[in-house]
Image (cartoon, rainbow over all chains, first blue to last red; front, side, top):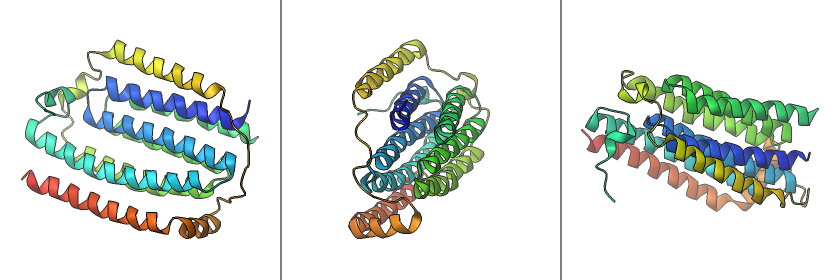
Length: 100
Length: 161
């Protein structure tokens, strides 16, 4: 089997595992970790595309995904600390009064 | 040999991703996620994208996950969400994720694409020169985004006091 096709399939499987984690876990930290799995799957597909086509675009996009992920995790951790201070729990079910 | 290497680390990455979904304690899940990221870095290195493998370890494992581990250490480990791991809609959520996986794999079946249209190199020096020639402005914008991220995180914590 073609290595690149195998890796794109692996990226799809990892993305769906991350999606499942976002939907099934109750702990907000585990939900964020599942989001990281989804981001990693996207990075894998970009790197696979970059090495397959031997162009720099996919690799450059990967670098920007890393920047976005770093910003996301900084903000997400601040929000986790804020939620724990307000509700005293990491359970996503405790945030049911969120509106909008 | 390379394909066997990629297959081995691909299977390992799926196993560690499963552990992230299943482990009860966030610290153990975070360690499984770090192992998952190392497996992906090994796959990038096997593909010849050494700079991506390096960035994966330095940025994701070295910065993002260390930050997450620090946050987990700050929080109380007697939380209710540690006892009840899964949400009530577990089965429908798994069905939806499986359906998305099947749809994605069916979409990908026809689109393997052609190999090697360009001649880019993914060593550190070649990639850096090509990147800064083409994407210097985007790079500057990314630094502004990072600065905004720092300010927003700081403001969020400050407002909660």
